Length: 354
Image (cartoon, rainbow, N blue to C red; front, side, top):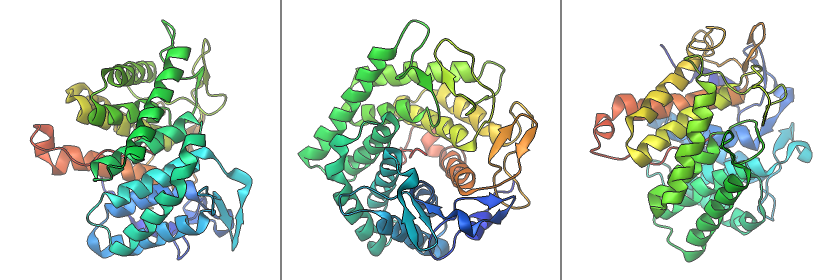
């Protein structure tokens, strides 16, 4: 399986990573999003030294340019204009988390760290106002990275604890004997919710957080692995409680979400079952899926946008490739390059989410 960064480079210009492509040709008119550039920043950190500086600078500069004075972000830029049409709390969470990870990484240049720190400082006052469960999950992971990197301010600890309590409250309010989840539906990037509680457990030793993380991720994976392979919640209606799981469209970002949560579950518990689940989820990209089709395109270096009823969505946009590449990097980090991790001799940095 040959994985390369050539398509990431093709999608990236001096402004940032472009949002969409027609087949494997970037669509300049689609613009750039905070969501995609935040994810791309996480990928760039793990590129080799000759490329890391250029790409981290490009993506962090875009994020800084998109941040308002109040710390929020304008999610979409088309041409030279920022458009608030797709702003979301989730984009705030993704940008905040990515910048926190940058601050904790010794491989990044001082300039990139400085910009990341300014973005984090500007966003911190917004955090208590954010209610989206996915957004606060990204934020919680960012806060945990700050704490483990030596940012021991009491405010950071309190924010992390408050978010964990908020997530657990939502879980208890929505859980039933047959529905072990935080909401009445499952939509996109679902696994980020248990992922963040696994992370919180590692700094707090809070067994309640661990129990909810394990129970909810188990419910998710049991539901999606019934046929012996990953079959993602489709975006044509999502999955509402007491209804069937829609099979299409299945998007790469959701496979990535499950892989990364399972890897974090392994780091938190050392249970090998989570490595097995991460591997099975990763194989979704390589044909172990409902259509037996590869999502990663070795010819272009891109990743197809979705599995659709009649096969593949032939377009290869930013979200698909950056979430695939981050997943590839994290799987490689744990399963191939660092055998000491498997044998419990070392612990890598926390696994980011998408």
